[in-house]
Image (cartoon, rainbow, N blue to C red; front, top):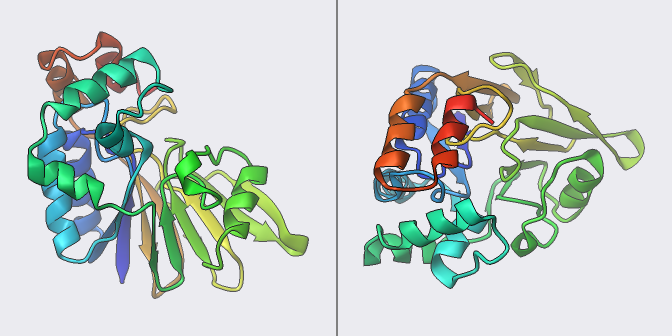
Length: 247
């Protein structure tokens, strides 16, 4: 089985559909969504409908901090652009879409895999897993062999070396990485909707559960169309420019 792992869509319909199409072309027969479905982008309702349909077919979906902010007015710790996007997004969603967000768990377990948007160590705190120390803390908080997360937006892989020492590994797009089950792994799968590493291409990862490999992918998409949707919505200009620059 091949499972596409998608995070940080941020209401970017073009980025999401490009990743889904690429995953299907590469044999994906399952999907998991690792939080922040909305926020920043111009197509929150369409993105939620697409993800909700896949969730109805069995895809795990967990809540991200931007998803949570839509529901509980908890955007006071965000920057002004994010706060404006949250406020605008609230007015775009119908009752069913808000109920879907409200029903999302903070974590989801599927066999030996845990999905969580930020750290598995107190997931509601939205801690960024941005270094080996925090990756180790997240892995220590669960018995799962594999932890897949988002929130950081830049693809990264960590594994537990001898003595319980977490080690960082920067993946190369398109290259399958063996992830045998005798080790424990944590992957930041990258952002499908708002890449921040200087590369405009959407990011996701593909887990092959039979061969025990993980492949990080970058997928060029129509970021100019997604940026135009942000401008048409009247959202902050910086959110559109961010897609154009991939940062």
